Image (cartoon, rainbow, N blue to C red; front, side, top):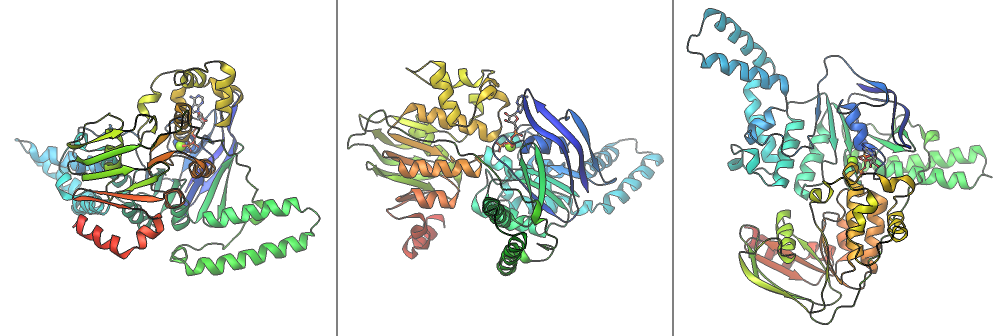
Length: 534
Ligand SMILES: Nc1ncnc2c1ncn2[C@@H]1O[C@H](COP(=O)(O)OP(=O)(O)OP(=O)(O)O)[C@@H](O)[C@H]1O
Ligand SMILES: [Mg+2]
């Protein structure tokens, strides 16, 4: 068990937590939700003692081991991949090091012998002999192939590093596992692997995610951060969402009698549990809805940002033409004729293929073969996958956004713009390097909107965004009159925006004018895919 007692934290006038008291108990998986900037990451950092609150304390049941998914992608650069995973179990790792140091000694004494056998005992007790093979299995499950296990972390691409750090966190069966948006850089198969792992995991999990599907399949509880308070509810995300909607409706119809309300709630719970028991959710330890604190469910009042993409000028007939575009190992032979108004979703087993393609189209990276050209009238608005380099300065938000605005430099315009992206009042004076993950993406979306391009290039636009912002973004892209090239692991997003799907593989590409669902269920496409990935 891990518990927070009277936690308060405030930045300037902004109160993140006001006397928060909450407990997380063994065997449960808590999905932490809340708007971008609500304080989810900050709360996890308080739990793991990474930052101190203004007041209050955290207690952990004695003898329990906590593991945290590292957010620092460079911390283990000097270590091999397999060692990095095993280092997740600090105690075991130290024993291994100590043991090896003794065996390396040239003047091995009797005392050394005794010490070594003690260490061997502890090592065996922690299942040390299986550590390396466990670590290797975990890596393989996460899609890190065996040839990469012995190389250095510094040699890995970002998306591979994330998997290794995830393996590190879950290695050696921690008692409390803390994960902040673990699915962000993972492909669908790896997400499925993680879901299964967490469903079988017997200890406590506290995981932040904006991914509904993920939350629904792993969570036994939803922990909502809103208005400076944190509260847990029994049930998965869908249950929380539907019941909070019901609570909102009931609140609005105040003339209903208390008994009627209660009856409505009970019916709702009955229906919901009947459905839930059919799904994967119902297995094993997922004893949903045993005890329901329905009366406490508060209707959430989340805000939607205003996302609108305008074009400075409409495009002519020529948009983009590519022939035989190739990036070795990622994709090859891409012939592409983009028509005005196309909304093309790029997909691949390897998400690095799309990032490479977009970087080539933005002239940030050179292709290994082939060429491409834009029509004369084309200007692009680009949302890159990585945005760290945009936020290393200490500008406040007004100055940050001003640098991307050519004509309209006055503060009223910029403030108006920031307001639409939900930064209001004093918030606009905070420094760009303290922003939360989702707030940074909201700023990058503002930058893309200011560019007023007639061709949008979006690399995983929904990463880090909260559900309200994803919805607003989704609608903006449906309404956009120009042309879009994008990639996203959000199924609904892809399915509702794209009219054309292009699959990138190292052995060639597929280009189909189909919706995403039709593309996925098309037998011919499947045959083609089997060949290309074989
Ligand atoms: N040093 C600081 N000074 C001022 N504000 C800060 C500071 N550090 C964080 N914040 C603010 O605190 C809020 C909470 O940040 P946090 O990263 O916890 O949000 P989050 O809920 O994880 O959001 P996201 O969903 O975008 O990841 C944000 O609005 C952020 O800008
Ligand atoms: Mg966060």
